[in-house]
Length: 489
Image (tube, rainbow, N blue to C red):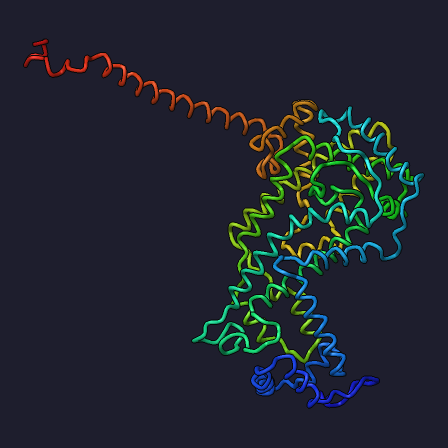
């Protein structure tokens, strides 16, 4: 279909009107921008039609005003958190999110209380000090959004800085996207760097809000994505999501609720009483963020290959990671640490919760397998978060980690197994996930190697001390008074 032919049922795209709108938007840079588009075979009216923007210039002006207001509210924050909050609340409310009745909340609190009693026989870690709670989806959003801020801001800030650096124009050369001298002058949005930051802040706000709001309709509690989403650990469940998961399962809803309460309470105990763990997980995300770089060559090639009049191709390119950062060796190391840590956390929760459930819940083993498969597959919100942050919050080696904890429980008992969390150096590594039975032998070898080093250092220090003592036995003027044969003068 010709760009000048209106779409069926749609308004006529007037090229002259669109040129007027572009001049209103770009100011003195409009003539150059229009000339460049025409030289590339792109009709401004066709591009506008493909983008889905309104054909009426007045309507487009209104849309651009909304964009300007959006950028203005972003401020200097790497993520527009007001936008994220509002979108997350709207997403969480899709399909209904009524307030919990007292009876409904009591069901959840009672399940968590029973779970704590059963866990006392399965772990040495005491209950978390926070009170058990039942939340609506909106309450889950409000409670966890501060941690989403901690997780995403380092990535958003690093990505915005890397993108601005990659696209910073050289006044003597064409910029990476082929625009002489970089951004056109006279754009109404002001400083181009500020424009990039504002756009990045708005985009991240939309993506974080989308991910958090969608997760609010999927998660069971505050820990089932592997990261602790509360600063102060406390067990909580979202009963609407628990009920949705229980539908279609062979186990009774009450049994499903109790099993998920066991997992939530076990994870809350772990994060409450292993003080270094939460910081370790969040630092792995921050380490990844600090190494973000933008592959300018990939960006340039991708942009040149996009036909701006083909809306489907444009959307596919953007969703395919055109602006995705490249992964550096330092980031790969951070991702490996995070992946191992997530597997160890969920493997411990998996082992402890199932051990606590086995004497009481007939369907404990099938429920364990259902949760494992659910975590391995991930959901749309986790996929959104992966595209946003570059991290897949899925414990790929959950089964291996559970086997490690089962081995430690069998060889050391419950107390000895849980004591491994006392220090990061004692926690199983990826090598232990490969060979759980070799954990003790490797730790013994490490201890012997450390003892050998200590002995060697002690010998060196003792030798230095002995030399010092020998020199100290002489009087201050003793050497000066010795005769030629060494006798005192």
